[in-house]
Image (tube, rainbow, N blue to C red; front, side, top):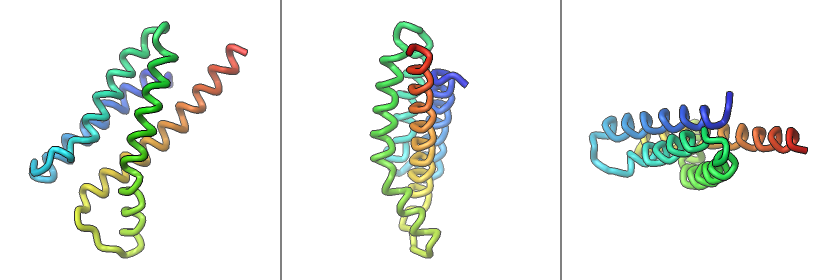
Length: 124
């Protein structure tokens, strides 16, 4: 699958995740919408990257956004592994969403780097 299309799908999924998190937590904190905010950026990046002249630059910016998202959600992934080991969670929905977002970012970064390498080989 082409990276712009994958980026759009990821953006839509993150928007849905944010909405589920926000409404699932009783609409108490806007921070539950953080996945949706990142999703909007991914969706916009995927749409912009469809234009061939912008693709390279936009995809690099989107990868930077994915790195920032991973850094911001990595703590949730660590907490999730702690939970699997028997630790108590104060906010299980938040930790679950952070862990899921961290895993999505790791997978996306892997695919993006692979795509960059393949593109580089085509031009070389």
